[in-house]
Image (cartoon, rainbow, N blue to C red; front, side, top):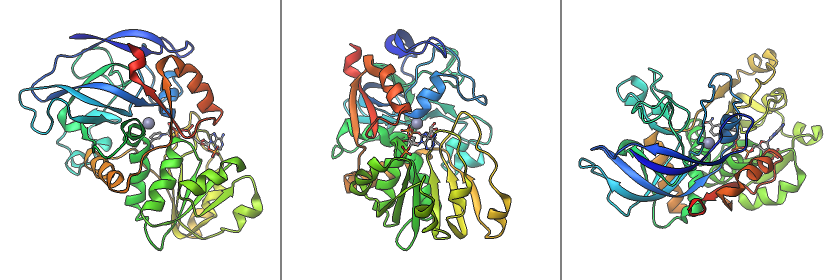
Length: 353
Ligand code: NAP
Ligand code: ZN
């Protein structure tokens, strides 16, 4: 095992602070990555503060699942990476590999519950009680869960693609966003701003819903054809029964009815936001009188994540970021809760040294 510098939450109530963790030795199919940048996802905050009943946090907790860096060591049987390559790790680091979902390249939905998430999952290698994420100087991951990153992409701004990017790309592809389709993205945060960029790049008519009028000009620059202020009933009503797909990235519990009523017949509202408290049940008649669907979606499989990274490299799509030293992480969490980030914090991991 090797001692590794990290930043950890010691409990749900304490601020994150410097810590030392262990990383396992590099096994035959493992890759060690020197982490250069790590994005700050709202899921990091939910987990650090133990906000999800279904997934209690084990402390100390080292968040971070938007990891990019350079390969520093490879195991003897590693085929697809060499020392010095750029590499990325997203929200998961292993799965059973044999169930129907894993065989369909959907490891995030492993039927045996075998998905090992990058942090706060029981550690199958027993290096620690749970896995530790990317707020650290290095990480050791099986090569099946490591992504290639094109030299064309600016590295720091690519980190958020590993979670925010794939979490929007996957439902956009699954529900066929593209030319002739009208897509709504709810919330202009880390996930939402990637949704606007990706929906636009896929050729869909893209509408952003935000509480905040001030974000309107930005949303258009990012690729939105139109911006709707969700608090304005008249603006909302103008889009009644017109959307093929709406994706909500909202990180807090909210009323779903105003969005369901904007779906066409057979339209779908997809929830990707994962709030601490459940949303109130939608009005059932709004669903059944237009055969509308309410769905959820979780990140994306490894194959699709690589496809998304290659798609972004071809079109030069990255995240709009604010680079911070790790010492500012607690302030960054407060600002994220206030919606004061354009549009993703990324930690410069050199600041750990
Ligand atoms: P974020 O940067 O904080 O963005 C969330 C956005 O939601 C805000 O910018 C805000 O947009 C809107 N919002 C926040 N509070 C709201 C409220 N009370 N009512 C209405 N709108 C509100 O967070 P993020 O990193 O994008 O993550 C968003 C959510 O997705 C989190 O719950 C996270 O855990 C979850 N997540 C899920 C997956 C998955 O696989 N499904 C993956 C990653 C993250 P406006 O200011 O524009 O209204
Ligand atoms: Zn995330």
